Length: 307
Length: 236
Image (cartoon, rainbow over the protein chains, first blue to last red):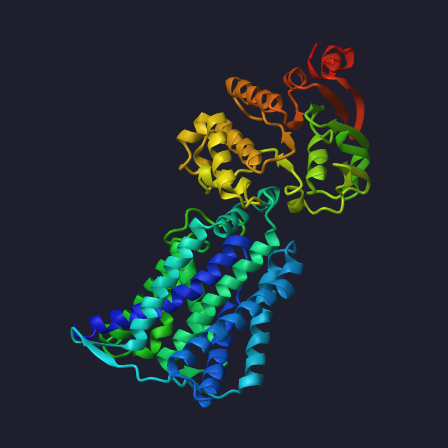
């Protein structure tokens, strides 16, 4: 049982990242009924931008803390512009098209971004130059390092901030109004397109932060990293109930825990037949199970009528 | 001077002409009603005035300026509010949040707070339910939410589409009492109704719309007494 606590910690850290990315999927789905399959690539672009800027700033002898902050801000800014452009160029012209068209377009955007990243940053694995040592701490027999603690705290603060934004501000109210009844929100004087653009930018900013977190945690950046992460975050959003913000957070953390505990114990459970390299199987097992037994997700009120 | 002036307005939906060139006008402070049977083009008229539909031809002048180049969401800022057919409330927002959405275009915090209090005075029922999700309210209460929400934008022209639709008689009476109250306070109102009798009793002037054309117009009292209206809409 000595790995239990360790796996829970690992699961919480990974789950925090899933939750941030899942929020991007769920916000866009809530407002447009669209599954933005390019969202995972936005995470990857965020990681790449952070890597490039961080390297440059460290080479220019910036203070480590400043370099980290600036590279994160740069990644967020680029991703927000990217999210805005994706919606404006790829999705908006298809706003009234049959459902399949934007879905296929989303996959297309994803492929374009992947290949663009491959052309710019190459096919190799880049190591992420974290400019300080992430000290490891002993914690009840488990080990947790500074980066992991930072990830969980930052994710928590961001999620609280997002809930405040969506439920307590004028823009958040407009987001919920457009999501629920875009015909009526226009009559309130809401420029629906502006709110939709804002939603894409907000989700992309969270994606950039998530991209930074993953890179800092694993120390590796790669042009293909967004694909699997995106799929898993999408699974997390479906698990929690797509379109539901609290669901995305819950689904993200749960999926992180399921994966981590599954990978930790699968060896014991199968008598060594399957190893922890089967970790990825759990996410998709969860996805299939949710789709069969509870398609509206854990916190979904009803089946999405537009899916 | 007329607040709203519509001239020869034509609107089509995918080849079908819903409005075949209607003209109407509303003066500041008037309560004007547009009556007619199902499919006559009443809702189409309001949607075109709110900017949700684009006319094929015709003129719409509001405060002496053409309204046609103004986008739907910008018309609210010009003082035009529509309470749509079926109410269009935000079911998953609370009553108070619905009203605040009505004030979306405004930035005067104290003014919004004052008006919120005023709406709760006008609709005491909503005050009791302010923290409740609007979707859990009865049909009549939802109609109140829709009206109060429209008033929160401080409109110059309030357009109501079938406010009595699907409501119990007692609630219809209440809604019309409120409409008369708002009108008495000087609000300009364009009221679309299937319930011709109630609408004509409340209004000063009326237009009768039949398959996309205005066939009759005049003082509400005269219309109420006219044979044509009696036969067609009042079942006399």
